[in-house]
Structure formats: structure tokens, C-alpha cells
Image (cartoon, rainbow, N blue to C red; front, top):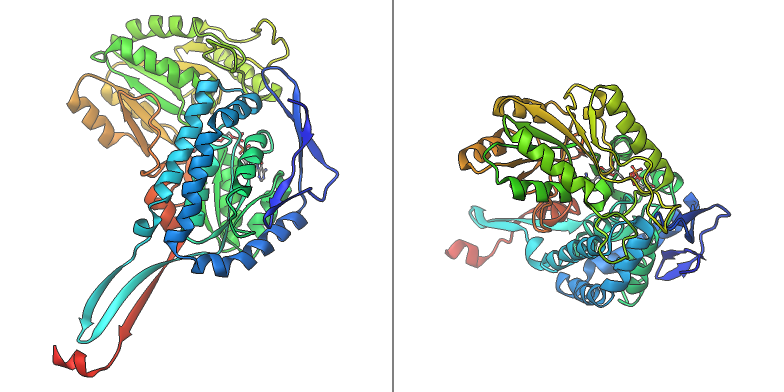
Length: 491
Ligand code: NAD
């Protein structure tokens, strides 16, 4: 792959950004520069918003049944190009090929669900709320909407929003992560083949300037965001102050309780995939294993073995189970946090620092790491690591485990491994998180359920995906209607 210059997709055609500022997009496994991404100026955002505003009246009037025909076509194109898109994701983001395929599959699921919009966006009504008077509730699109997305799922996360936004009749602008802009570039090549009216779907590459221009533009009605908690807080505040609808998904620090009655082989296998899959760069990665009672001994030894034996390398090479982390800065930050854990008294059972993959010496690899005896009040226990590091926190009983689970600021996911229905039921009821897993390591909701982060993992009320997505992208209109006539008096 040779380095090339990425462009924006505005008003139905590819355009160069009006800037001299570009960032390199680097393959984190090979350190090869893949492309240059523009840091577009606010003026490019304005051009896109104007195109979206012009497209909106006709797009909104297009029957929902006709709008979804473009999504059926998009699904087919994504299926046809799945292998190619997966390779691009692996090259720019570092995850393995199988993980990239999995991500695209979860994205396609959202396209499929949004194809149900003619039913999903139905309103409701009552006849004769008073004699001869009827009342109806309709859902209408908002207008121009935008999403700002993170590096760790370059295609899936845009697809948490885009299909619902346009199926409900909005015009949508995507600002992808400037660290992984190549899969969305190729995705918009496919969008260009849909023959959508110009302005309905647009791509503006860039960083903070693009984000701020979207947050401040008076014609942008709604903002969807996924990324770290400090940026989520910033975007939520600024967009809301500008009168926009906002949904912001933030960071995470996900606890998993291991009960002594769990099937330990299953728990270890699933936990290793949750903690080290995608190099720990999943917002639903298991980050802290809370071992209850004598679960500690069996789990600790087995998870250490699983961590030490995981094959790390370039995600397109056969047999590789875990790729690099996204950047040198990320590698440094993760290795420093492992050091912090050590200083705070944790024991490094498996140390993934300063390790190299033969043939990929320049790659930003951190190998799976397991820290034992991490105190729930320590700084490490409260900090999102976003790397392949699992902390172990032993506790005496279930009450103590729930106290540790609920003692965190985040609330993206909490899981339990147990053989008891009653224990699972109590956990499900008491755990302070919006996505719960029972004998599951990555409790990622299917596209027809909301991705339900809580606390510092989410700002807003309507989440991404499914019915929440439909509600987020529509405003309700209630009509009270009387048509005086001979007939209304007859019945
Ligand atoms: P990030 O917050 O650095 O960036 C996300 C987006 O915000 C990018 O498009 C970036 O260009 C933009 N951005 C960054 N700094 C900005 C600023 N100061 N002002 C305006 N815009 C800014 O996140 P990331 O590193 O790309 O992604 C990793 C984070 O995302 C982790 O914290 C992870 O937990 C979180 N995440 C959460 C979910 C979820 O569903 N809750 C899903 C995936 C990732």
C-alpha cells in the first residue's frame, strides 16, 4: 500500500480539503506510512453543512420505503467488500483480520436494522379523544446531524449512527478519527456508488477544528460522539450550550466478577479474549477481574498462562491473536500505567512491557500483562488503561465484589461468571453499569438493543443503535385534528 492523500466527500463528490495541514496515518504494526489525512478547516464543514441543508427537504419527502433501498444496496456492497475493508482496518488500526471482520459484521447489523425504519419510525394515534377529534403522533427527522468517532472501531462505530440517521430522513456528516481515516475513505467510495442525492451522506476529515465547527454550526441539529470521557464531557457541554441534541459515549474501566462456582475453563478463555482481544482497545474490554473467595487461586494461574501464551504480531499474519496498540504515545502511556500499578503495590505476574515482535521491531506492541493484587482504591484501578492489561482484585464475598464494581466512576459494562442463577440475578439487579454480561466477556448489545453506557461512560439519554437511534434522530409531532362533517355526527 503506498501513501496517498485522503479527501473529503462533500455534496456527492470527492474534494481536497482547503488546508496545508496533514497528519500521517501509520500502520502500528509495521510503522509504514499509509496515507496523509487532512486537518480540514471550519470552512469545509460549512460547505458540507450547506450541502446537507439543501439536500434535506427532498430527502425528508422521499418515502421511508424508498430511502431504505439505498441501505439494502449499502449492505450488499459492504458484504462484497468485506475482505478488502477488513484488511484496511487491520493495517490502520492494528487489530487482527478476524477482529476486523467481526467489527464490520457488527456494523452491517446496524444497516440491516435500519432497513426496518418504515416500521421503527411509526408514530401512534387515538380516534375520538373528544367526539369527532383525533390525535396523532408522528416522528419527523431533525435535519442536518453529525457524528464524531474514535480510533478503535473505524467502521463499526460510524455505522452505529449513519444508517439510522439517513433512514429516518436526516442528512448526515461523519468526522472519523484522524488516526484511522482510511476505512471510512474506502467506505465512502462505496457510498458514492449508491447514487444517493448529493449532500445526504458526507465525510469531513480532520481534528478539533472540524469538531468545533460542527458543535458551533447553527444548522447542525444533533451530535453523536464516541471517544474518551474528557472529550465526551467537552462535546456534551458545548453542543448542548448551542441548543443541540447530544449523545456522547465515553471511556470505560470494566469489572468482571469471577465466582468460585464458575466454569473456570470457560471463564479464563472468555476473559483472555475480553482483556487482550483488540489489544485491550475495546470500550467493553474486561479491565479488572474481581475474584471471589477461592476463585482467586484457580483463575489467577490460568489467566496468567493464557496471557503469556497469546500470539502477538501483525494482524494479517496467520495465527496472530493480538495486534499492536494504536501509537507510540499509547504504548508509552500503557507501559507507564503498568509501572504505576507496580509502584502502588501490585505484583506484575505477566509483563508485556519492552517486548518486540520479530520482523516488526518498529511496531507499537504491548504484550498481554496481568497485575495481581490491585487495590480497588489505587489510581491504577480507577484509570482507563485502554491496552492489554488485566488487573486482579481478590475479595472475600459477593457483597464486597459488588462494592468494588459500584465504586467506579465509569459504567459501561460489568460482568459475572457464575454457575448460580440466583447469584447472576442479584448481580444483574445490583451492578451499576448499563451493559451487563452473565458468563459473557464482552457484553456488546446487538444492533437492535441500545448500547447502554452509564455514569462517566455516557452523557445524554438516548444511546446509539436500535430504537434509541430512531428516537434520537427524530422529533415527535403531535397533531390534534377535527374535521366537522355530517358523518362525525352520525356515529
Ligand atoms: P478521543 O476522545 O481521543 O477521540 C475521539 C474523537 O474525538 C476523534 O474523532 C477525535 O478527533 C476527537 N477529539 C479528540 N480530542 C478532541 C478535542 N480536544 N476536541 C474536540 N474533538 C476531539 O478517543 P480515541 O482515543 O479515539 O478512542 C478511545 C476512547 O474511546 C477510549 O476512551 C474508549 O473507551 C472510548 N470508546 C468508548 C466507546 C463507548 O461505546 N463508550 C466505544 C469506543 C471507544
